[in-house]
Length: 310
Image 1 (cartoon, rainbow, N blue to C red):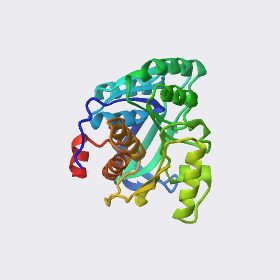
Image 2 (cartoon, rainbow, N blue to C red):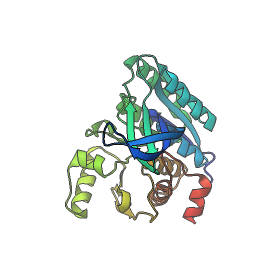
Image 3 (cartoon, helix red, strand yellow):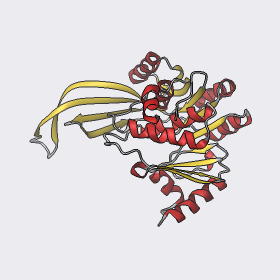
């Protein structure tokens, strides 16, 4: 299918942002101190992660994007702000001196991840309240809202944000976290992966039981749709008019980190531009197949997606 012009589509993204740091090196020996590899670091790289990676994906697809989040008043927060601004993303990052910016440090050796170290603290209520006020002002200027929940505390007011956005007639997409989905009630669509859905509804023996449990959750939360991302099994959309399944696009999987960001960004851009659900899910599935072939948190460009869709 041809990819529509997305340049007039406007998205507002709110959620937990983080700085993804990568240390690349060579592994030539095992440490004499403990049975672990010694990595001699040769180079480092920084990329915007979390909701900032979602924003980067939206921008790469050719749509307009605004990002609203919280960072610490520290070196990592400034580095993240510089990275996002350099990409051309319109951004409002609240600086909270009481927290440290979330950082995920990955050590890569022999083209594989050897270790990840996380630094994080939850933002203060005062900063979150100020962010909610700005959200209320900005929501009227977008076609769709993505709420990217990484469980870092930046979306304490998510239920109120959903209510405000839906009252304004906006499409609301949620990338969920945790075992309590009640706070996502009345969003347009929620996009859990298998582990996230299992944490909420329990396991399933077969496709029939999965459909029953997913549909029950969708109805309980009054969602228009629930999109389950299933890695090598593709993705399945559950709506009142039935289920729609997309098989995984067969590609060599190099790195799955950030794939969920690409899925929700693509889905949101397509829906906000007026595409039907079947086309939006197909595009998101194809984009996911492209991004897992890249190292680390990455984006899929409009030209890459257009070629893959054709």
